[in-house]
Image 1: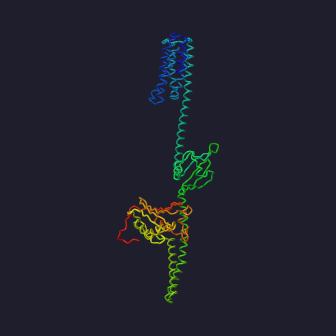
Image 2 (image 1 turned 180 degrees about the horizontal axis):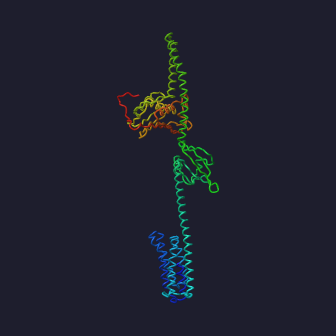
Image 3 (image 1 turned 120 degrees about the vertical axis):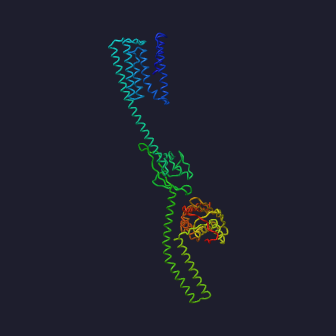
Amino acid sequence: MLGVLLAMAAAFQAQRGAGTVPLAGFFGLTAAAFGFTLVSLWALRTGAAVSVWARCQPGWDVLYTTGLVFLTGGVFSPFVTLYPLAIVGGALLFHRRGSLSTATGSSLAYAGLAALQYTGLIRPLNPFPLPGLETGRVLVQLAFNLTAFYAVALLAGYLAEELRRTGERLEEARAEALDLALLKDSILESLGSGLVAVDRDGRALFYNRAAEELLARAGFGLRPGADMGTLFDLSGGSRNEVVLDGGALVLGYSVSPLRGRGGAFQGRILIFQDLTQVKRLEEELRRQDRLAAIGRLAAGLAHEIRNPLGSLSGSVQVLRQTLAPEGDDAALFDIVLRETERLNRLVTNFLHYARPGRATVGPVQLRDLVDEVAFFFAQDEEARDLRVHNRVPADLVLRADRAQMEQLLLNLFRNSRDAAPAGVEVTVEARAGPEAVELVVRDNGPGMPPDVAERAFDPFFSRKPGGTGLGLATVHRIAENHGASVRLDTAPGRGAAFRFRFPRPEPGIREEAPRHDEPQG
């Protein structure tokens, strides 16, 4: 507005001629107002001394308008209309209080100027043709302008208050929306399940941290725009499963439609969870159920077979003593007794597997045990082509049942030999951690396909001719007796690695290596 006034004044002076109309005071006053307003604007934008400049701005606007009215005729000056602009400015800065205060200041300044002009104490400049100072005309002008000032003040104050309240409600709504957005993000990021929003083409639009971490375990780099259809069936379905990373990761997932406003289809929501451990526990539960059934069967076999075998063996021994057979008859009696004893031993071993005793735990020098078992196993003619590489640290001590650990290693060596009868190398490694001792027995044999590896620890499951299917099942049972976990890592052409994790004893239990003068085994 000030810039427009300066342009109008310059045009007016150019029309009337320089010096005809004394506008030097007008130009100076307007230039000062222009500069003051720029400084005030800078202070409001930067926050420097805002309170001081903001409080001064309405007062300066009133003084400037009064000076401009004085320079342009006084009571009847056309620039009296600038007072309402000053009142609106006060309302914008200080709302209703600012509008009423500025209206009061404008009324006092204008009425005072009119009174001084009417009494002749001052003589305002008069560059425009204006009416005379008749009493009635002055009073009407005063009444009209003062009423207009307060009308503008009330209206501007009301609008400013509404604007302030609307701004406060808007800020509250914005803060609530921000809080809700943060809460939503926190909920999505805290979910243990992976969540991915995809578009109509199955490409990722949004995903949470759990989704990124789960898929990273399968070697899939999740990023915006990634094609999720390469991993999941996005056609729908309440529950589905996908196996990734060669079976090392099993994900259960569900797909739901993603709809926008009005129910328009925009894409799909993919939610998935890691079911790897759940699947392992389910398999372990099935194995335990089978073992429980075998235990019940073994108990029945013990009563139904061992007792008749004992009677049969005793009767044959009595007959042998009574008849005193010689030659072929004596050999037949020996065969009956030997096979009876072998059958009794087989039933007993089967009963031990189905209902094993508790492990007698003691300190075991694991490296020495591996050497002893490897030496013993090498005496078998069929094990000539099996080589054992013992990489167990010499000072590593494992608290375990020595006899059961011997059986565990023997069964693993025998399994590697049977898998590769033409020759195989077995490597035994171990590492003692703060919470567990990790034992790894791996070979460079042909490995196992996934369907065989899945059932490797099942009793009576064997792909070898004449195999009983109790070797690896016994290994698993021995690990269970020690509270250890066992995992099989294998693939066709990559050999097999059995990974055991034996828990360390509770704090306060001291592990000591056996003394060399003590009998072991």
